[in-house]
Structures are given as structure tokens and as C-alpha cells.
Amino acid sequence: MIPIKKNKYTAWLHWNISAQCNFDCTYCFGKIPVNRSELREIDIEKLLGTLEKDGRIFRISFTGGEPFLIPNIVEACAAITKKHFVSFNSNLVLPNVEKFADRINPERVVFIQASFHSRELEGKKLFDKYLTNFQLLKSRGFEILAEAVAFPTDYELHDKYKIILKENGIDLKFAPFVGSLNSKKYPQSYSPAEIIKYGLDEERIKAHFQKGKLCNAGFNASVVYSNGDVYPCFQIKEKMGSVNDGIEFSDTLRKCPAKFCGRPLNNYDRRLFELGIVSRQ
Ligand code: SF4
Image (cartoon, rainbow, N blue to C red; front, side):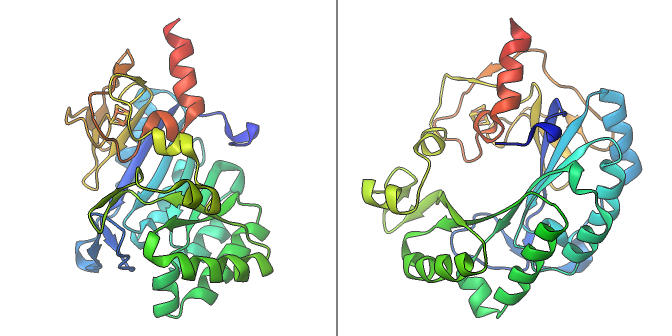
């Protein structure tokens, strides 16, 4: 549940800021290796102009790839959070994380989802960096949670790190894997025992299948691609504008047209979805 003091935004941009990632997790779809010369900076002035034109208070959730690879991500967050809110999905090991902890007001950060990628952290010897950055952000008052993908071939590693993290005061949660493995489709192939053991949220699994149900995608929530183009969600290909020169939101909620949804916006931020329902009445 998002704390009340951070509930002030009424619109949301879910920004897949770059597909580039410093990790190479098996279960990640769409990632590409880091090529710093091709990392695009955020045009802060144009972005703020777009938010201003819309007039609402926004939450911008940065995801990827790895958002802390963006060279001016901290400067962009410092400017955005003067009025709006941000949230992050990050593997937490890049130098920009410390800069972020020093410069950004935790009151304006809805949460940081510190994705725990055990195989990569172990292989790249970055577990200590993850832990140090997690504890730094926590000590500065940021809302932060550790979450791993319940990838079926990694259960042994998960069990090991769940204990180590617990010893360090961190409660590791699990999110369902979305994709195919050994001819099985996930998340629908988790057994009841796996669901219980990893505390998987059955509502969250069901939320991937909601063809015909109401969604606020394009109404008060939308997704942004790495080039800044804005769409209702990753399944609906109707361009709404760009973070660089304005976004046209729809004035109605829509019925979900997709058989399967990778990132159900109406479930990922329930409060905004409910606000959308209320504003129709
Ligand atoms: S595909 Fe997902 S985000 Fe898009 S309308 Fe359906 S539930 Fe909403």
C-alpha cells in the first residue's frame, strides 16, 4: 500500500527509459547490453513543459532495462520531484544510486523496487553493493522493497539469499515470472505449492488476463517508450503523444483488448484505477 503522504498524484507515466541493462538475467524480456554512446539523456525542460501543460500531479515510474544508467537521471529526478513524484525499478548497483540518495527528497519517491537478481549479483560479485545501497536508501527514509522474480530454475538460490537478506533486516518478496520455460507458460503454470512457498499474489497473476475488463490505460495512466513516445499501454498501439511535446489523454476508461497483459496498469496502481472509476460516476 502506498503511504498516504505520497498519494497526491493523479496521473502516472510508466517510463521504460532504456532497454539497456548492466545485468543479463535469463528471465528478462527485451533487454540489450549497455552501449553508453547510445544512452539517451532525458530532455528535462521539455518533459517539465509537458507535465505543466497537462496540469495534473504525476508519478513517473522509471523502469527498463536499468534506469540508473541514464546519465542525467538524478538531475531529471531532482527537477521532476520539485512538484511531482517518481518511483523506480532498479537492480541498485550503479553509482547513480548513491547520488540519488544524496540529492532526492524521499518524500517525493513513492517507492523503490530494488530488484534482486541473485544469479547476476552472485556472478558479478555485486551482492555487497546491492546490500550497501539498499541500506543507504533505507537509512535516508526512502520506501524500498526487495523483490526477486520467482524463476523456477533459481529456487535454490532464492532460498539461500532469502535467509542472508533476512539476517540483514531485509524481507525478500517474490513476483511471478512472465514468459515461457520448458514448454510451460508462466505465470499460469505455477503449482499451488510454489504459489504458497514464494508468497505469490494470486490476484497479481490473474491481473495478466483481463480481456474485456475496464482499465485506466490512456486515461490517467500510460506507458512511455525509451524514445519518449507515449501509448496507453504496451499492448495498445495508439500513440498519445510524447513526453517531449505533449500528451493527449483519453477522457474515458477502456475495455482491455488484450488476451494477455505483461504489465497491467489497472493492477499495478490500484488507487489510480479506482480514482478513474470514481471520476466516471
Ligand atoms: S493490456 Fe493491460 S494495461 Fe492494457 S488495457 Fe489491458 S489490462 Fe490495461
